[in-house]
Length: 450
Image 1 (cartoon, rainbow, N blue to C red):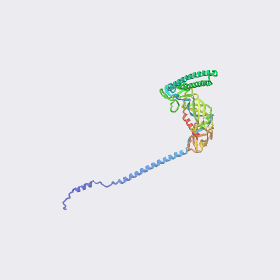
Image 2 (image 1 turned 60 degrees about the vertical axis):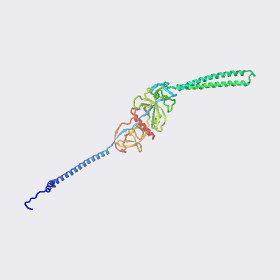
Image 3 (image 1 turned 30 degrees about the horizontal axis):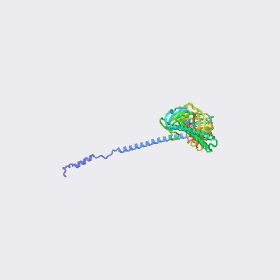
């Protein structure tokens, strides 16, 4: 190639040059490595600091929990305590009862027919013999008319037989007094037989009259039942009839009663007494106080009138009846009432039911001594009315007893006692005592069943 010749750039060469100029440089900055190391050191430092903070926080929390647990373990358990007190001269025993009418009568129809009128409605006060309703009885009226006609016919037949008997008697008298030989003995005996037969027919006719008279009397007596009357002074509590209703005589399950009538003065009160108190109440002659379950209204004073003299096999309760005067009739049948009895004491001291504890050894109480330490003492129960318990032995008056003691408290543990009010007998028929009295009955019934 000659020197003066020059190389001309080609299109391929131009492309290579352009590519070399746009390529990224692979040279690193001299401080890049030091920066990465610093960042790594800072990150590790942050992790270490966070770890230290978490560990320190957990340490203090564990220490606080441990200290609280230790304090709780060493602290004395707070308990409520009462002082046992001696039993009074008479114990008040309140039980729920139910009122019942002195007389209660369901009145049915005695004749078949339909209701023509009714005069008394529910809530009406009626008197003995007062007409409550009138029953129309066309069939009975027709039967009575027929019976009277039959009686008249029988009476007419008596008149015929009486005339026959009189004629037979005069004929026999003539033949009997005839001279001997005028009539034969056979004819005389025949006339006597005719007379005796006439007398017999007369007696038969009289018997028919008596029978027909009995039929008439029967229908007349049945006709009196067309008027439905009150059997005693009382109050109408139910009415099941209206004008035009068909009624059927009888008192079966298929017949509908006309009225229900109750006599509410005097009033009966029935109480189911648990077995634990049955023996005491069966012979109790102390006054009994009765009040409505809500505590409102007057207090009625009465005595136990009678008992069933036997326990119910299912509930193990004794049915006790108390009769009381109810002149204002503020008590009505079916009411729940509270009945308060006064019972003679059977134990030495009384405690609330919350102080009694049943454990493997039987009934116990937790006595708190002067050093605030717990000791368990076995006791015997003389009477339990559900709220207050009379103890026969095991506790003396003035002993401090724990209430509702936790099962975690053991013999000899030291507690922190707090004295609360002792047991109080519930007032007779006090307001709001229904639920507690009912629980007392249930508890006593359950214990009696065991």
